[in-house]
Length: 122
Image (tube, rainbow, N blue to C red; front, top):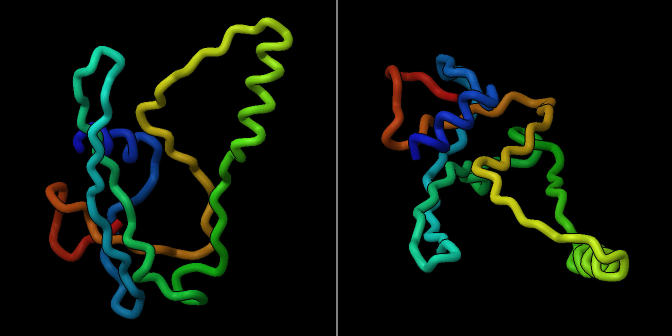
């Protein structure tokens, strides 16, 4: 969890501010996952996620978009790599944070276990 917090803070994901009285605040939580390494050992990963279901259209957000890769695109790239005799590699990104600009102000409660100051939100 500490690694996740450090990565989010180093990316400038949020600012710690006083909570406005008339603005809704989104809650957050930790999501844990066990990843199995190639040698069979387990590694625990933690991700901080906003509980977006508490947001209201027109108040906290106006649109949603999540870029994803279609499996047919991955198959095409694999076929091209085989055809052209290319090597295929894989990497694990520690913190795959996609930074996008927000047009609206979104306030989120501080993550459990990492609270700093009373009445402050992210």
